Amino acid sequence: MGLEQIYTQIITENSRSKEHKYVVDQPTQVVEGVNPSCGDEISLQLRVKDGVIEDAAFLGDGCAISQASVSMMIDLIKGKTLPEAQHLAEMFLGMIKGEVTDDDQLEELEDAQAFRDISHMPARVKCAVLGWHTLQDAVKKAESSQNS
Image 1: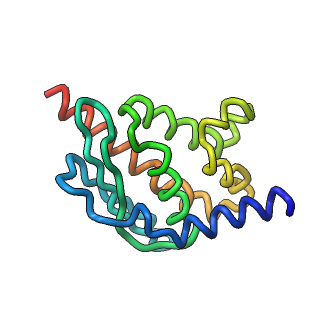
Image 2 (image 1 turned 180 degrees about the horizontal axis):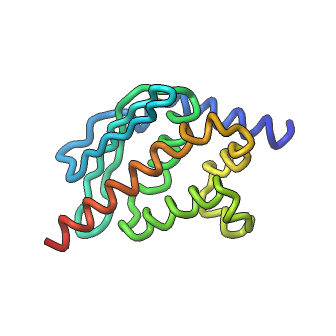
Image 3 (image 1 turned 90 degrees about the vertical axis):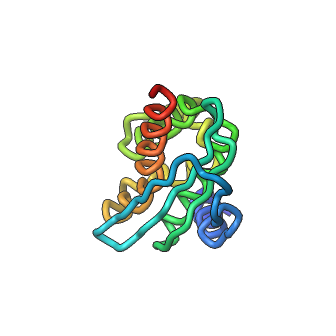
């Protein structure tokens, strides 16, 4: 099985997974993300305590790419600090833009590396980054609520 087939399988499995699709108990942040060009919609829910993401989940509908991407993202951010989650979002978005190409750096993204070549499909880029942009909004809100 080639690398492309493995990545396709990872994306397919994550898009069908319900593991991270639930309502977070007592979320501290709930941020909506919408991709108007294709209709993907998510509600990202985080419970942050002492700067650490204790729980994260999402609700919403969209294409396989948006659903798989946000599911993989949640796998990565649970248990991470807000700055670590922000770093992962920047790394993912940098990978999509072709700005982060070092394999050792990209190891941090684990299965989310499956989206590495999505930039060759411009119509799908917005689908892949929806959850990550929504995460950045949630991190900003969480950080500002901690500082106030």
